[in-house]
Image 1: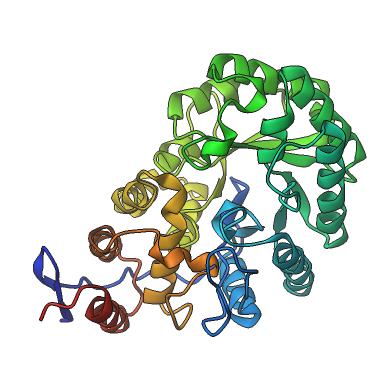
Image 2: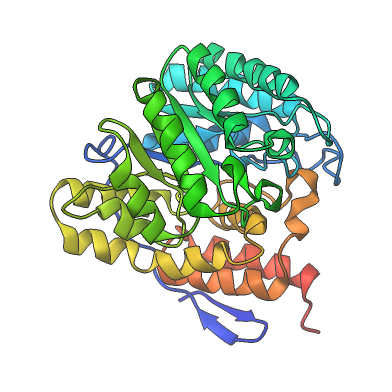
Length: 382
């Protein structure tokens, strides 16, 4: 058995990884996207504020890994460090490269279109709209479904709900295919406080439903990341027929995807990046009607997810990349923007323990060796 000394915990014996059946294609009962991280070039100048230097080969290999499991990929999203290290030139290249890979493999791909090419500060609504239009064109040219990302620039420029309705309505009308809306709570990005024109979530929900009601035939669904299961269910039940609710709730995803007698949520989740093999197996169990297996597979991932996305939630990407390194998907723990410093050593030690308990470390010896090397630098024990 593989063992490791962990600060604050003593000797830790690693569990055996989960033995999962081979992937058998995409789940049929739910539409599922894993929001994927980017892999930095470890020899690039990935300092805070510097242009992102990306290891494209490893970044794209990880997307092929997700597609091989039957999951869709949501790219150029929050998990890929949009607004936290991944600048627009690198994002544009990521969308283009991922689009080519999706065409080559037949993988399901949706990509974020936002306004982050704009400099910080206040812009006119016309400028915000033009920024959305530029990014929408890049996404559609790549052959991906557009996700209209929540925009810091729009949050700063809008004076009320009517401005959101006007900007979104215009962009939706230009899209070549139905879009996915994106409601990201301020726990993921404090600059999005008051999105949809109000800090009152009931009022914001009313604006969202008005927008969707006016454009239901042009909206595939809405991704909701508020970490509030009851609010998500209420919104889901109020949506027009044919409009999906994509859960982005990394705290309650098993129950929301499972659903109830009134319906279910589909999924667009950052937590599916590190737990992709387990998620794929659980969703196939759900397709087969084996709810006990579904629950048993997802249950150990919940403590991991809740720790991974603990406040300050926007630093969850640090844990995502650590887990990718520990699992062997990349050869280093370096991030664009220097974001590997976003979590403390105790947080990452606990993340390691919870990942082991969830059975998501495919090679315990490799994971233990890499964690030892991390701790030798970050927290030498003497």
